[in-house]
Image 1: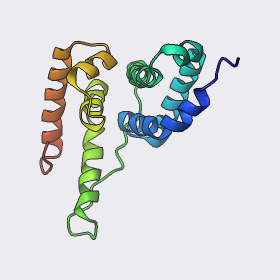
Image 2 (image 1 turned 45 degrees about the vertical axis):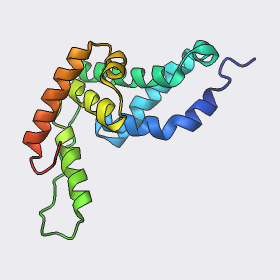
Image 3 (image 1 turned 90 degrees about the horizontal axis):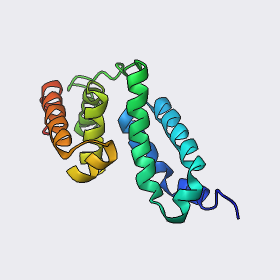
Length: 161
């Protein structure tokens, strides 16, 4: 029996969703690819145990968050600042403008605040699930959510949060 049995199927089935989460955490496609590749390498090394009775998706998502926070603590990553929102007079639709403004505002959050926003609002996780994935208390999730939303409101006041 192959110790990686089922791993390829898991990656094929969940790769796009995991990549979106990694992108939302990092704000950069290349960093997201690196993050996901690193995490999937770690997941592969634990696959024999995860594939038999564990919850590989939950483990992988928690590993994404932990690895992202670890990278941010170890080194200062360049923040994507080239995403200037065009003036309203340009021929872009409002949805694109809102997406660009939100993306730019997300880059200004701390890594923990960004992780909370991604888990709570993008992945629609409960406070309890978010706390478990981030390895912190529910109170920390609540306070980080409050601070993150306050910061987003200040950075992009035209949006509704």
